[in-house]
Image (cartoon, rainbow, N blue to C red; front, side, top):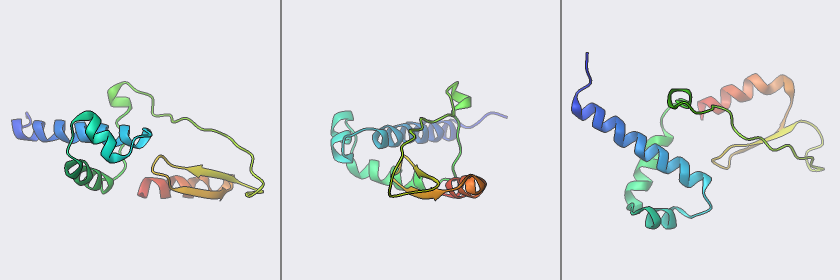
Length: 112
């Protein structure tokens, strides 16, 4: 069964905005500056950012032939004497994660 043209078009539009939102999050540009650089309206960007933030986390990296791995930087900190600190691309930070807590943290991140 083939997808209708509008379903395919909607999926392509969603993917385009998902890529823009992800790129802006990795970028140092503000949302406004990013939109100006790429000819996007800030209101549309904001709307799609909100819509996509409500989606369950689905990683299609393998479908696109990309790695699903993310870069990790290990730093020592006197402020966090034990455990690790996890900072997500969104800026959310989880401190003091012990190795025994990793399955719980993975479930938490997937739920975000």
